[in-house]
Amino acid sequence: MTKIYIDGQEGTTGLKILERFKNRNDIELLRIAEDKRKDNEERKKMINSSDFTFLCLPDAAAREAVAMADERVRIIDASTAHRTNPEWAYGFPELGKDFREKIQKSNRVAVPGCYASGFISMVYPLVKLGIMPADYPVSVHAVSGYSGAGKKAIAVYESADRPKEFDSPRQYALTQQHKHLPEMQKICGLEYAPTFNPIVCDYFSGMVVSLPIHTRLLTKKYSADDVREALSEYYANSYFVKIMPQDEPSDGFIGANNLSGTNFMEIFVNGNDDRLIICSRLDNLGKGASGAAVQCLNIMMGIDEKTGLV
Image (cartoon, rainbow, N blue to C red; front, side):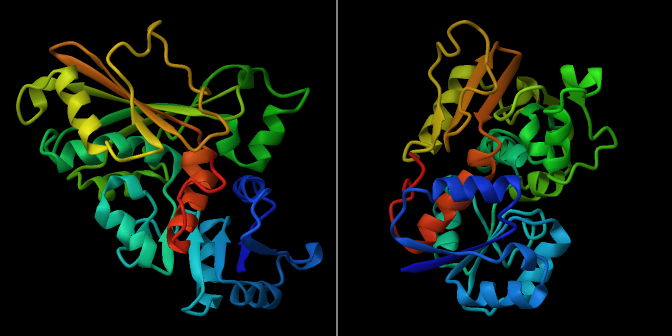
């Protein structure tokens, strides 16, 4: 029986991982006593008693946990701490055979950020395939449910006497220092960091990340059909990442919460000869967090990657 420990199991991502383990009989969950959750000696004992440890922690605490772990313990880190570390596998297996193989073999896997997952799903293959030059001036816009903002923000959103502005979409990260930007740039091989415009909205989970493109700035003139076909071929063998057909969305609207509760990601390509809009839709708590973490676990265990996710 595979022993699993979740360090930070009371946070949003940890709780969602626990939900995805609900009906699994191939793992044994190790539980830390409530009064010892911040006891480093007890944490170290739990980590090193496990085969796999998930880290659902702030960055500093995640680094601290890794320092406690024996080399044999396989770590899956949902924090930002190790996503740009080349010694760690980046947990987005659909990006290529090399990503999947590194996840499978590694004892250290960093789960992508939610916004970064949507962004990278579009930009990485475009750069890899030579469609988008690495020096393209990338801008990206995104809307997300409030569940990605952390427990304190969730409590405010769900409070009966919350501030009135929480009834509306709220733009943030105005200084262009969002924590997902380093992985967005590095994983995609971009020469310059993108301009990033995230917006948190009054619904629980789900997100759409949108990439506007001027076709005149690509390596040659590409139509929406050209880009859609290239992405379809790139993700042809993927179960969780799907390229949507030409007539989608049929009503001209892309909702952000349609994939809430799933590990799926849908990519839409629309536009005209001069300007394209590529959109990646996912659950910020699914393919953008807990679902991706469990998918990585399954790959590392050598079992069907869909286990517990469908």
